[in-house]
Length: 99
Image 1 (tube, one colour):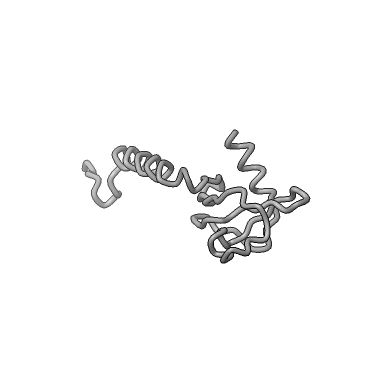
Image 2: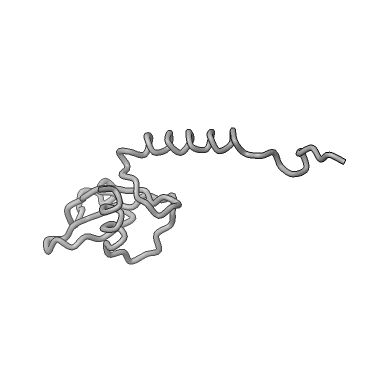
């Protein structure tokens, strides 16, 4: 489901370069075509031109996270980083060399 959603989001029309780490807002026109905008429904000031489908953060791996899942995703990333850090070798200058 996530891979299918990500593929669909990558095919949505967009008139700007998407940058990982930023949140984008997906809208649907009357003809059912979707496009990304930088403005949230609130930022349109009550004159949102089309139906707001959802808001998503583009991740550095080019997946998309719905804004309602950002807290969970951030916790998952923190947990992964802790595991990686716990198993990482110290920098070469700190490793002991035997003579």
